[in-house]
Image (cartoon, rainbow, N blue to C red; front, side):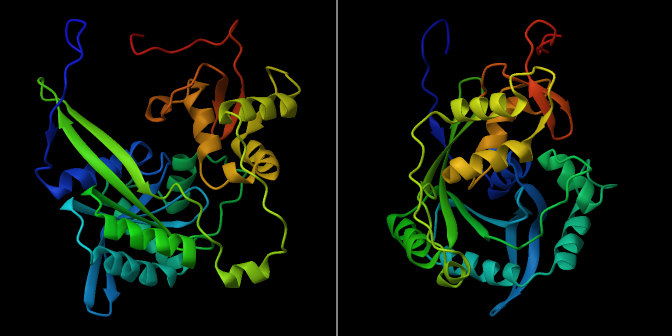
Length: 311
């Protein structure tokens, strides 16, 4: 906006694929599924059928699931699907020790991580208290992301088929880059494939007791979270709650909200004094107060100070 008038920022091309890698590496919650990821490898080498392959970004989510992001400049080639499935086959066989080894080798090259162990980095990234047990690595869904300036319809169609018919958690994210007159870069993302539910593989269906699926909630997620927190704390502004406690309660009543980090990210985006609050979209009203790692309470407007950028 300039002098009260909207100014159109023209679309621009990425100069280097590496720029996109840098943005995703440093701000995954703004680009991929609005979730936090802990990246544990960049251009990590893996052995495929045709020799050594390199995944662009390799990480874990808050539940210990492995995450692979493959980035392409311009129009995504059709063979990227075979490529990312090759990475997935490699990652699926990794042991806990191998994952930690890959992570700690990568941390030595990344600023701010050199002195951290995997456990320390994981707890910090996902705001997990020292008293909580960490999730098992690579014990659930393997999450695949294809990120490009253009996702062709045939690539999107195949990925939807993999999700709906084979239970492969693959998402396609279309990314557009704009540049303002003042040379500021604006990044816009759209999830082309990935918002749809994916089927549970037959092997897992046999292990789980059958029960009728619950319909997704049509209430605003912020209202559900606040109601749950108020019930858990009995409205006591000094009562402490953890993200894990609230997620567990909500997952029982609203399982559709437990599939991602939506609950914890909404709390963080509405949390006073949480250092990374500005990275979560949308940023909500002042509703919660950060106490310590993984611990929160309801916001008390009479005594809690709201930090601003000008202070």
